[in-house]
Image: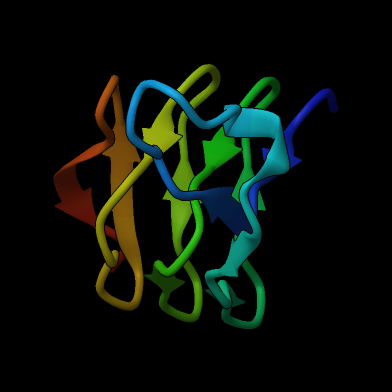
Length: 83
């Protein structure tokens, strides 16, 4: 519920160029099978979330997560693994 997957970004131009006029940079995101995203999770572009991960509510995923890991926080950090 209310989660967001951000799969692109934009460049940050020099001062005399408008940010909104810059092209998008595509950042493919991979989410494995049987993954549970808690409410309000944000998954940033370019990361891979392994199979079987559990990500706690409100977490912001900015780095790859190994399979069957349990992650929480901003930025998301692995706190354990599913047995």
